[in-house]
Image (cartoon, rainbow, N blue to C red; front, top):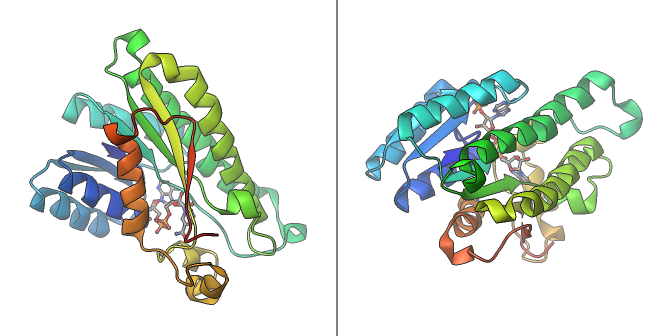
Length: 244
Ligand code: NAP
């Protein structure tokens, strides 16, 4: 399995659960090398092989290098989890600038599409690959819009939803399933990037289950979509939101 952004949060939980389910795991990180080393140790403690690769998802060259290293180490990649995603300080749209928008769309949309492209080139049975599964990380923001917080991020995640549907149709006959998970409010560091580390606790009473989610609860949904238990599921977007 190749997990992008596996050094912490949902990606780290996915890498660890994947190892517990018998996958060797390659994952990328942007800058937190020590966190990446800790995830490697957790994968190895579960008895699986681990490879951490530094890659910035605003760089198509870094994404291609990540794939080259993953394939040269593990041979075949059966599952890609496109988990890297970024947001910026909470702001109204009227105050956005182009630099902010380019940063978000470069990583969340362009980076995710390039990562899917590398996966299809590797997995497609039409080109001699073994087939496989792609799981993209969307967000409940794609449905709700994130008004007053990060409409740009929400729009980028809506693009991930449509990408998932469109690509699933393109590669369904090439042995590749493509699905997405839409997390609700999950306890990770991403909310600090938006300027509100305690955001999940602020919004939790608006969630039908009256609590935020844990990264492990998203990882469990990702592992189900990666597995043969979901063998007839493609082009689907699974809400894991506590009812939101
Ligand atoms: P997170 O805690 O902020 O972790 C982000 C991960 O991505 C880290 O491994 C980080 O590496 C890496 N990363 C960040 N920017 C990168 C870049 N430009 N290039 C390459 N790697 C980069 O995120 P998370 O909360 O686990 O979110 C994971 C995914 O779920 C994202 O797509 C997010 O949009 C989505 N999501 C999250 C929530 C939530 O409430 N947490 C809700 C809905 C959707 P370093 O550790 O090296 O910095």
